[in-house]
Length: 179
Image (cartoon, rainbow, N blue to C red; front, top):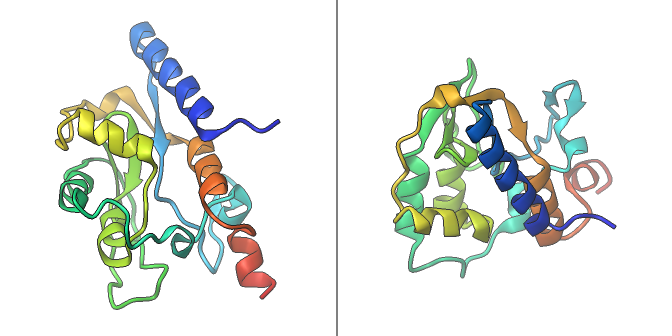
């Protein structure tokens, strides 16, 4: 039986606490990473083979209308943990071509700089566990020291499982290559 996203989140949260106590680097929970119509290699695996969704699959015009501005502020206030040489562009092919070159963190979660664009401009929904974490922090990104975190190690299992539970099948690969 496949683990559900809540079980995965609980497992990782415990692992994060144990790593912090032991003085080891801490894995961050990745969210907001999308497949590309061109296919990008991530650790020698195509992104659409990783189960990453297309953002159109999690659009929800009614999601978090009252707290959307606080969520957007939080996403834009993340602490830069890693920068890249190239920038990301919108998967919806809208007029917003430059979505940033960095990954942000709050000490628990990891997201691309352009995630706020998807929430604001395209009404993309995010995992409730992430919003609860924001709320616990009063929608203010806590001060964290990025040297405690593994920059190149992303914990994607939660994001992939959450997307599988919250998007219609098939995933991106079939949508682009079998339509």
